[in-house]
Image 1 (tube, one colour):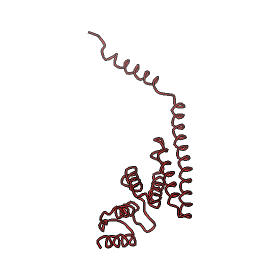
Image 2: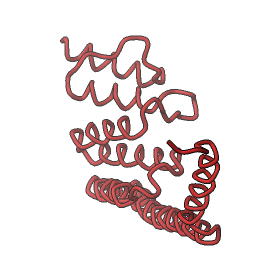
Image 3: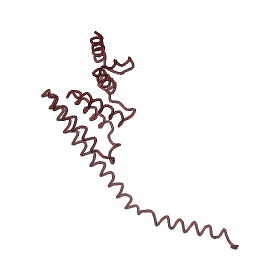
Length: 181
């Protein structure tokens, strides 16, 4: 039996601390990794914004030309921006990204692709749960587009809890009356 068992405990702790210090990267290398990650995020957002600007311009031109095909092209560009964003910047600028997603959904709708708009709306909801976009009058983008897409598919008009503009609600009611005959 050892004579001084408690004397070895401080030595073991001291040796462990010394080894742990050897395993830690020097502070200057830790900063390089952080800076490199921030640079990659900034570069990814820069590329995303350039792509988004191209899609917004395509959508603007599509509106001027009243061209469904151009609206669909704008939607594809905007959707591609998001899909190319990558994991390093997926949590950045959620409001900007939501607006671009919303514009892509609207462009699909204007282009006559209701199924694509419906799928885009579901991707928007999945990518940004518990978040919404709001029009200038305070109405919900998700509720409004969801109601329009549901009415286009022949589904019932949403109940009064949907946050949609009065004009849209009135038009959906009118459509429902015409369908009932």
